[in-house]
Length: 159
Image 1 (cartoon, rainbow, N blue to C red):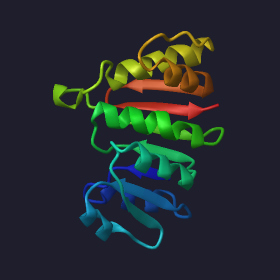
Image 2: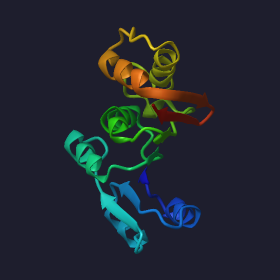
Image 3: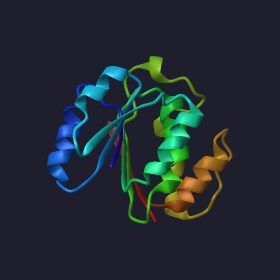
């Protein structure tokens, strides 16, 4: 499991309990989050706005990815566009977009709009997005088995 965002480490402890045999990898920009590491829960310091640092996370090859980090749209899209392809068939990607504050929206499309476009392509299996993110939206939409959009979360399952 790869979780983007550590905060106070509560979710890391939850995942360790919920998945008693899993290796948990959690990413945060703050170095002091390293204090939450355990034998099975590893903390990686990385900046999710840095393409190279996000790309290095591909080496983990997780079955589940949860993005609950900065909630800044550009960070979330970089992570989704970079990491979705490393999921195995049946792998799960959970994104927690910011829904209330415009200060997180630093892109032409917000995370919900991008996810809606991905969902349309996943449902139709026709790569027809023509937005600024078309290549990534079409690629992920064609590779997604399911996209479920709800208040506060978007869940993707890889085909």
